[in-house]
Length: 500
Image 1: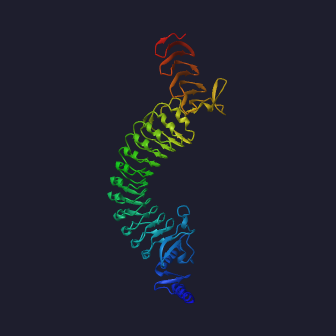
Image 2: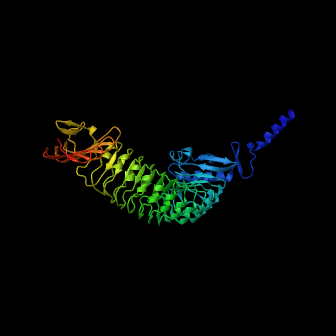
Image 3: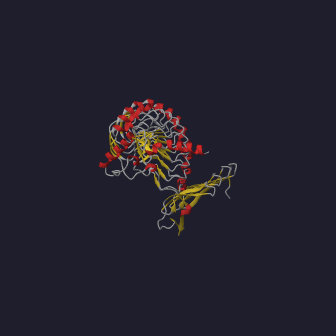
């Protein structure tokens, strides 16, 4: 037993010999560990270069204290230092790295994770970054980097995340980027990148996020984008893309967000967009899209935001839009839409924002819109005699033969409605200066129309009609100045009878 204990002690001493400073050549002992000096030198360069910034790290900060680090076998494998507590809380620091990223960055050849987002780094991305072939994550987002993206970045064949957005990068996207087949997240916007999105974008079949927004990209959206069947977020907003939306976009059934707004896209909205049943946000606004809104858009039952405004869309608002029961934001104007607002829009009980203005809509605002009690912002622009949003009669009260909105002294003008307990419409009509004016319609509990009447300045006027439950007309009266001047009656079989 004694011999065993002695052997164990010798083993421990030998295995921990490096603790007492016996590090291999090129390594430096710090606090009982061995660190590759070249890696430490690069970290020291970041500290030194940042001293001229507005919010530098402490000048006496040790290299192993920069940001958050992970070391393995004496080599730096992860480095994360960010001034954003919101986006990068795991490595937030109250200082900012600044100055240029020098070529020595290429010495960190064991790095697998590099996040220097939300700092004040300037200058160009050095081509030596292409030496970091073990990188899986490269985040240089939200700095002040300029120049072009070095083609050597295409050497990073293990990359899964590449975030270079919110800088001032120029030039075209290097072709080698489209060969980084392991990429799941590619974010290059906003910047000032130019050129076209090539067909080779279809090589990145593992992408779940593609953000090229707020650049100066030109040309069309390639049909090969339909190969990216794992895509969840597609952001191409605020570029200068032209051409039509490729129907192949309908292949991307995992998409939850599509942002194609603020481009110069033309043609119609492809009906295949109705395949994207997981969509939550769809923004095609501020383009030059024409044609009608495809009824297939009603398949997008998970949609929360639908923005089709500022295009040249024509035709009527499809009835199927009433299927989007989760919608909170609907913007369809300005466009050139015609026809009336479908009553099915009353199904969108979660709406908080509704904009249909600056179209060519006609008719009246359907009373069903009055059911949308969550609406905070609403705007209509069309020929509507009385105007206003329909309100429930429960919100009105009568005083001396004049109807007012509750808690006001202003006689009500505009459309009103009443509902049965099952949510079916019971009645709708209009008031003018507190008196009924225009046509009113009544329905039975099962939704069948039971009566229509007309008022003029609060007096019965024109033709009043009643119906049996079987749909046959039962009675018809004609009024003038509030007095009945004729009446006709029928039995349930449609035979005219004496009104008695």
